[in-house]
Length: 483
Picture 1: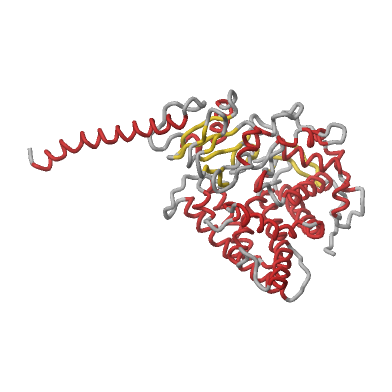
Picture 2: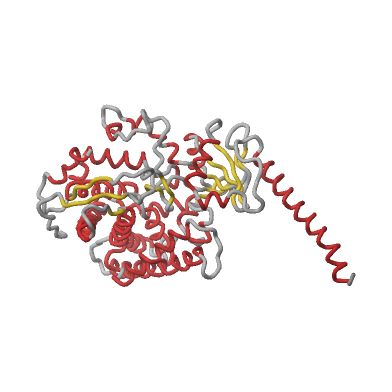
């Protein structure tokens, strides 16, 4: 036997022993953190349950729900990270209320910092975060929301027209999928409302491509290597941030000239110009690059945050006049439908946090430092509410007041210091879409086996992409003009 063969004959058993030791230590490490909490007792080496999570996220999270039924939470292990799934509403509130340096950090996605970068509103704490939210507040005043409402109606109308044209080009016997069409509508609405004319037509098209790359990357393993979806998503985000940074700079120039705001970034920069003039120094976190990052946060939050006769009241008005914010508030049934849509199918079902320090979740269990915690706003939506598995907009009427009685279970917009600052804008958008969609178009759901099953894309949507038959309902479309 030559020396090399002799060396290998000694090395291989040592390597095998070392590998087995590492696998044993990994199992012990997991079981010590798991303790007696429901969750798998045996792990696939190194990867844990990442393959089931990526290949079938719906089934993975349904299993976590089942496991958590007895104590309100469960645990698992994914790609080297210990995770805790929170089903119980009060425990979710405990997480949301403790986003601070010695408890939890909001991360939105398990590998969010690799995608979004560090300079992001999501990861801010304490006074810095409070100050930033205060400077953002003028973006969502009644005056600002009224401006957005007009823009939203113009964009929704053009998309509804294009949907009818698309359906007319295929066989009337064939349905069309709405999911991607609605996503495109939401993206254009967000672009126009948030940055207006500061983004060119060419940049909008590139933005759409990059946003698709971003969405795809959210659902893939975090392999930051050329050719992989995660790397493509990172590069797409870099291009989008560059575009948004440019928009912030252009808006700031325009607001310095004293012009009237016409989109969200204008209202923001108008306030920033005012504060700077009063204090003689720009407020913290107000560079063009930082504003660009925060605008991307808004876009991410708005991406999918989206009984017909009762809410076809949109048509009982001057057909060619844009609806005002006051008229929008008067549409009580449609407002209730929008609230119920968000309760029944919250687009973002889980809000990941990471434990900065060991945190006592209950009297008998402490979440270890470094764990990723997933409060489920979806599960909270089906707790407390009467006949919660039924779609009933009437639960938000004055007679039932379930929005008051079960307020703590309505977590679709989060809670605590990071509660969604744009929830009124999101609900207005949903109300306008519902009202215009059912007033201007007739539609019928194309039903097949399993069509309504939930899939993650990364927000939830129907398994079939929401296939519908469409036709125009109104004699003619409105002829809107911007005031």
